[in-house]
Length: 270
Image (cartoon, rainbow, N blue to C red; front, top):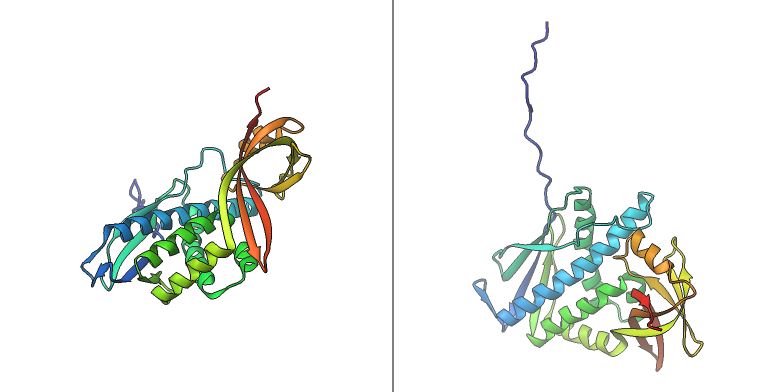
């Protein structure tokens, strides 16, 4: 007769392996592997985490859509990074995403870290603004540009590292030429527009806004929106509202094109 299994858990719960990524710096603002100027480290940390947050929001929305939902769930925590170490080499900073209740997001966020590295390298290697807009979420571009500006201002070389992937290096000269090109061809800012909201499509995330002068403005809604956010904004259909937007202007061959992301919308005062 088979022995009775003891009560309780036979195996301790498995702690999922957290995704990790590291960035290393070299240059005049770095002293070997022992120290780094606070301006370089602080600004790089802020812009790198902002890139991660926006990329993770985008990837979470795509994962939700693949699971049969259109949007992130209401009450979902905002993605965040934790600084977990300063690995040696040239001076390095190591990150891991903050653990979420939904462990399935670990793999989404692992991909987000990889996507950030690929976006940084694509920005260096491609001089085609259209390619960048098509390949990198629009809300990632602004912190990405500021990250390169921080590198350029500090004449810093960057090395990107992730477990299982070979490291890649961006020289100080590449950082400078990249940010100059980005700042010359792609400009982003938050703007407010007043007009009549003409609705949105849930599947594609596109919206229409007719401005007071009669011009039709169209774009996509922010990745951070939940279904409840879409319900609220959809209720503004055919009403006058004030829309908060991220405007992206691309200049190429002397011509400028614009695109928009809807960040919020509220009923306009009477």
